Image 1: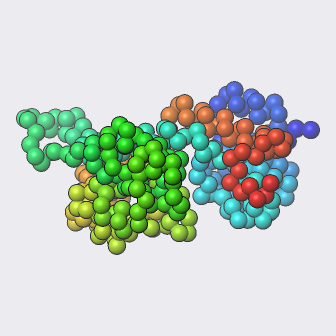
Image 2: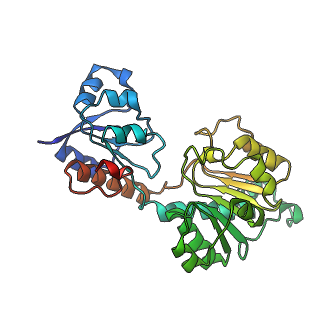
Image 3: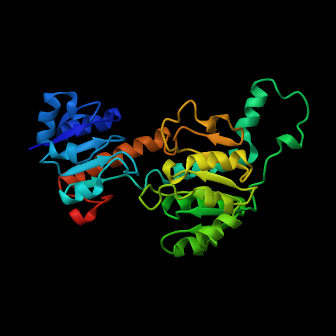
Length: 323
């Protein structure tokens, strides 16, 4: 018997066809139970679901008593109540490996663009403001040979460290819950306290998931410890940073600049003070946003879903204790 699946995100055509060949698929735009009886009826029979960026909590799970697998097309799983899913023995699958290198590329793009003021100076040229040889008021900062402090030395943090050490001869500091022996061996990375990393680093790079422990981990006290010539780079999760404190640190010259791909509220509101600051590079959460990687993520999520439903594979399971 085919599995009953709720699909709430578009898939590439070939992957969509594969899903439909192996499952009874109900395609919806939203997981809002209020959208009608047809959706609630499909949810009542659903054994699996696949999609991204929509909340899955107790209210929805109450309507899906047969659900066994939820597969998100992302590495992050902030939108899921993992504890509740684990209690109900529902596997949550994600895509941790396929976006590592692409996201590391984006993080290093932020480092380079923030340090060399690329977006700001690009805008100056485009607007006709480049009328003579530039002076010190437009100078940026070197990246090569500087100290990079990585908070969160996981897969992506390690990929950033590899680029920094072997491509730009940077000294690598890191702060992590556990010792990363591989990073220490490959990149001469040095484990240190958060205070030490903040006070020594020329670039502070955040590669953290959002948890109760990491929410607003970087706030006024942490900015006070950073060097005035340092840059904050956030390629992890926006709420890890106290955004109001970041704005004040940038305005008051406590740090030189920032490169951001994530924010407390997304999309970034049009009235955000971050948009008024020339020393901030703002990207629209594009960490994995390449054609190749987004296809690979969708393929991985589909394989995760089908493998878990058929009990062939539970690789990439967030809550393996369910298995």
